[in-house]
Structures are given as C-alpha cells and as structure tokens.
Image (cartoon, rainbow, N blue to C red; front, top):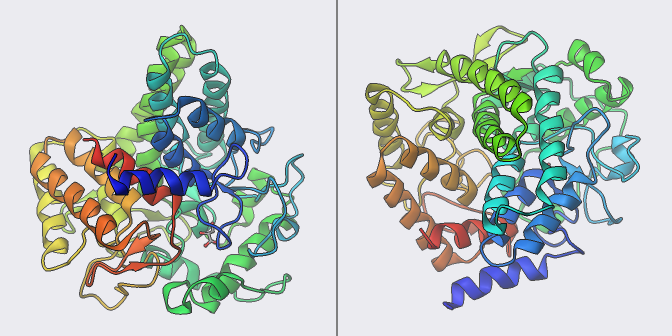
Length: 417
Ligand code: DGY
C-alpha cells in the first residue's frame, strides 16, 4: 500500500472515538453529520463493518420527527463551542438542533453494495434515511416547491460562504448566549469565520431554541431562510439512491413516494438555472431574490441532473474559467472578486469533498476530461500538503485543521478511480 493510502487509513483510525469518527481532534471533537457520511464511504472500501457502524452511530442522534442533527455529542468535550448546553435540545443522546447536507443515503447505498445483497444492517438505516428525507420535504419545504430551505448557514456545511452574506446581514448580532469561541484557539483566526458571523450564528441558535426546535415555529420565526441548490442537489442524489434501495428491499410504495419527491426536486432545480451566470442559483426566501454570489453551490446540481449539452457545456466553461491559474481547483468562491478570500474557510478554499461531488457530477454528465483534471488536482494537493481540512487554491497550501477525516476518505475514494 502506498504511504498516502496508509496515512489516510491511519487518520481514520486515529479519529475513531468508538464506532464514530471525529472530523479532526479538538477543533471538531464530536460526530458531524455529513463528515460521517463521507467517512462511511471511505470505510466501505476496506472495512464494511466499520462503515455501517459510522452510519449507525449517526442514526443514534435521529430525532423522533426524522431530522438527523448536524452534530451528535456522544461524549463531552470542552474544546468546542457551541457545545450541547448551548443547543438546549431534548434528544436522549445530546445533539445540535439543526441539520446538514443529506449525504447519508448516498453513503448507505455504497456501503450496502460493498456488503452484498443479504446485509441485514441495511434496512434499519434505510428507514432512518427515509424518515430524514420526509423531514426535509415537510419541515424545510412546507409549500412543496421541490427546493429545500436552510434556516442556518451551518446547515449548508459551507458556513461562511459569500452565498450567505446578504441573508445573514439581516440577522441581528445580539445573543442571549455568550459567544465564547474555541475554534480560533486551534487554528489561525484568518482561516475561520469572523466574530460578527459567529454572533449571527448564535443569534439563530437562540431564536430556534426559543421555538423549542419545533419545525413549523422555526419556519415562521426564521430570520434566515434560503432555498438552496447545493443541499437540494445532494438531497436529490441521495433520493435517487434511496429509491434504488427501496426497490432492492421490495418497498414499492416507498419507491413510488421517493420517486415523486425526486421528480419534484429535479424540476425545481432545473428552474434555478441562470444562463446569464452559467450557474444554478439559490433563492433567498425572505427577500424573494436569487442568491447571485458566485460560489461552488451553483455547480453542484451536476451531481443529480442529466443536463442538456448546452447547459453542461456552459457549466464546464464557467468552471474552467474559475480554475484558470489556480494551483488547486476547485475554488469555492470565484477568484478575483471582492469576497474571494483564499484561506478563509468557505470563502475561496478548495475542499476535497466538494471536488468529490463535482467529479461525480461531471462524470454523470459525460464531462470526463474535467472530472479527471479535478481528481488529479485533488490527489496532488493532498499528496503534497497532507490531509488538511482544505487547501488555498492560489498557493496549494493545506489550511484549517490537519489530519482531517473527510479529506482522508476523499483520498481513499478518488485514488481508486
Ligand atoms: C463549525 O463549528 O465550524 C462547524 O462547521 C459548524 O458545524
């Protein structure tokens, strides 16, 4: 085994806290939702039992209404803010009160396929995924538009993306909870969201805790509400995989229900294509306006749509224009614009898991050359700089947390293709 493969597996082993994997030590000391789904896909390549375990431990955090929270606090740690006490939720295992991109069913299908058809551990996880997808459509798209909305930037996984700048600016900076950040004690503050962002993030937590985390009340009170294309695209891909599993498991009624939701989201996503930007755009449900900020989210629909050649060609040209002259693709904000900050978390850096989604989407749409370029660029960045949380696209420097689980999982996945 190559030394990098060996190192990727070692990182997943070191970040194991008992059947679940922390994203990295200290900076993220609990189980994170979409991180774990990527990690499960990594494990599925060499340890199927451990891959199932990752998803099973995440499902322990699932709420009665179906939501799978973005953090499950299996054991206490004082190296992270906001911890369980700030969230004030009531689940038996302490959890946060918001969710994260639904990669779970995408992972479940891969784990199931690695395990073989008779695997008895799939059906309970399938049920968990189905409940969660129903929650997305009822709690986060109550009007049945097909696009699901986020009530907190953390739900996107792209916390401080320029995509949220206008919508977040409307959220007050006042908080009931004292904001006592720990992240900037672990990594350089220049690589993290700003203090003002954190005050707004915590204002939202306080607001939803006051709604008792009840989805209808939150929907009504939310000062931040964005119908989002990246999340919907991931939900649709996960929905396709869930529909596939439903048929395998002989759940024909479920399959029909999921297929109808998928069709709704497919149509809604396509309607978000904006030829003038050569991207898909999210919609700010409070202002009623398109989110025009140029971020990676606009390309993620490649993952779950079979696009006409004209649209796929325009997306690819735009992606190439963004990647021109960068050392590591794919920048999460268009280089050269004012909000592009190549080291600051989701305001420019390249992330291996975003590249993974884009590579799958490019392949789905027959864009194999760009997919291969992006795959090589991701592998090169990791082999040069190590398993960093993300990479500065202009210099290639590994940034944020080190020994990062999802970067290791992405490497394991991308190197074998
Ligand atoms: C953080 O704390 O930075 C996380 O991304 C929130 O989920």
